[in-house]
Image 1 (cartoon, rainbow, N blue to C red):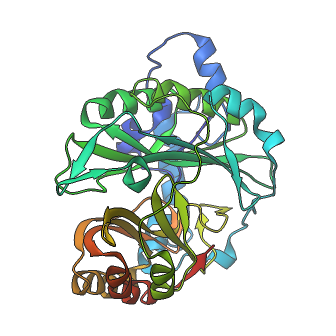
Image 2 (image 1 turned 180 degrees about the vertical axis):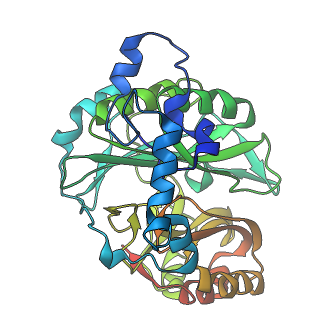
Length: 362
């Protein structure tokens, strides 16, 4: 059975667990297909008794509970037995691609990445028509681990009308949501971004669940690759200003950074860049001007310095939040928006990059 990330909840929060939700499709076949791992107490064991015992054990032993350990900083990555990701190839994910209904690609030889851009939507924010590659790019990534389990993480764009049906489909297939938030200001139509998470030993079943969830949205089918589009920006100047080598994606110039630290999600080591990237996306507006939709990954002590740097650069702050539930070190993300001369904005935004422990990708 798939489990959401994070420590066990107490007995008073049982209703939050996807495992106790009735299947909306009904029948034993659906439930059997979703039993991916034994992360929840076995059937027949009273859940309140198991959860109460789990909560009391560390207290009786004089040790901090997981929540207290995280709050007090006593949780130590070195004391946990961590599981490392392993390299894979496209051929390892053929059945997942078939279940999802579209092909993906490999990122850094470890992440099987599938993009699902919302080309069906015409979104405007701050009087700018937003291209899909700027801020409307749903995506999911599958990672294989040394214990032969698979983790899935993703960020999905949905309209406000789609949000609840999409959520229901995820819950029916026991795929967890770890964040629901905004990336844009004053956007029409109303758009939300949903971070998803699953971990188990049956990635094809997860892919089927994701397909069912996407089918409750207007996410369009895949289309043949398009030729690289010229970007009407001084990309060399942007690169020099930010200290990175960017890349072009469907008319958008993207500059990406990853955290230097080893990031873990529970007992799993995340491959560099999975759920821990800072991204600066430039959409040309003509005459060297650009609209920037950005996202900075930060640890707690970096947050205020980054917020100050962004406002000094003239960027508008959109949302400060988490993407995961049990990441270590704990990561925070700030989405921001800016419009102006591309190179000047890149120079102004450089202090926000320098305030975080990141390295450029590219």
